[in-house]
Image (cartoon, rainbow, N blue to C red):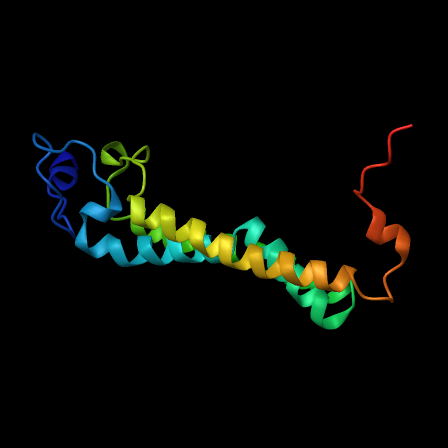
Length: 150
């Protein structure tokens, strides 16, 4: 029985434990694609992006139900799908050798921030245009405007 445990065949080539004891999916060729996919899904379906997309949909539909469903679907399905790809990527690395604390490369972090900035700027622009329409009550438009000092 013990001989069978020692005769495990590795499916991927991991770096030498003496040189690199902890391994990240970006270090393993087979794990890079699912990890990159997981990151991309996470960047495109973050809660902030989901809220911004819901705001954009609200501008187009003038309904509250459709944007709510769309926002929840984007965030929920995105989190679920991203988690599946992330688990696939980490499955290539034995648990005791996983480097889960390593930060992502700077271009990836900047890319994620740019996605959020682009969607958020469109959403804020459309929200401002929507609030300027006459069918929006004055009370909604004045929400957040500071009261004059007495």
